[in-house]
Image 1 (cartoon, helix red, strand yellow):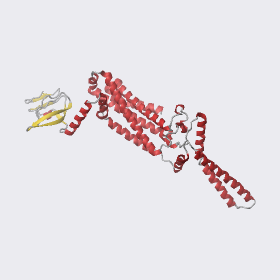
Image 2 (cartoon, rainbow, N blue to C red; image 1 turned 90 degrees about the horizontal axis):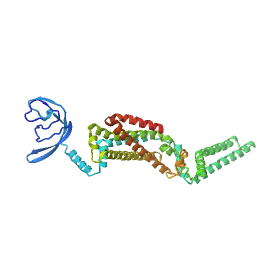
Image 3 (cartoon, rainbow, N blue to C red; image 1 turned 30 degrees about the horizontal axis):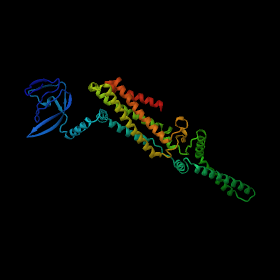
Image 4 (cartoon, rainbow, N blue to C red; image 1 turned 180 degrees about the horizontal axis):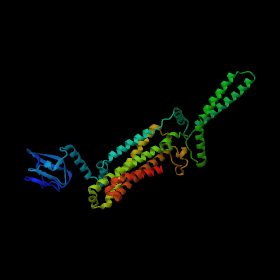
Length: 401
């Protein structure tokens, strides 16, 4: 213990109980290696409240005739009135809330979980924008035809295809007649060439309808086999959104999401084991099991909401890039979804909700996995277990997806 008469060599083993400063009196310090302490300073009848942030070494040798507070304590900063007021308001609010919301506050604010979420969202936006495909003018024109003539009632396509076929038949008939006239000397070679070019143009226009003809044939087969009125619609946009062409983007987003979930779920547990707070929490009147259940529930809700937010952001970017025409059409209208029997009677929008639930369940599963591993396996060394968990999750995703 230090006092006003402390001279010579002083060993501070358990912190500072008393110290003298030029502007403050009656300061009390606890046995901590670091902390923040409130002080009251009286000056001419006015009482000023000040918070001083201190760093105190467990052992400090001082060889001076007079020992000052600066010899044993490092003052980080002072005069944090606004931060102190905000802290008091937050603590008052948290004291009136259930324990669940206190855990949410610890994960989001204390453990800087909000920074992790922002970084994951930023990377997701970058991935989505970087993976976008620019369609050619011909492909854009075909998609416009789907919007104009397609859908559940595709009679417009049927009429258009019949018209193009009739144009080919007429051009062929005129060419045959022109050849006969050419043989009789009634037409020149240039006249016959014009009929040939007309037939070539009509055939080219009919060939451009081959994609629509294949789609109509597929829809007719679905009607005969399953009795489902599928839509004649473009496959390109949805193939990029959740088809095979968007698999790389989806895998990267899942990897980034899993990385963020591990960081959010593990950081707070690691801190509690390192500073011994887990022992204090475990000795609460409701027991460790209740505390662990509340913490796991907070992790599940937080990562679930984060996954939901991530999916919504991804779909907004996909909608702006490709559009989502006929979103209420049967899912089987997409040719690459015909293999999934369980999805035959749902719509595209319902399938997108299933994908959203799948992403949320993935985030929750990774969160619970991380909580279990940090609590029962890694404990104080849970920080070292983060890379292992991330590698395992990434390997599983690469195998599944």
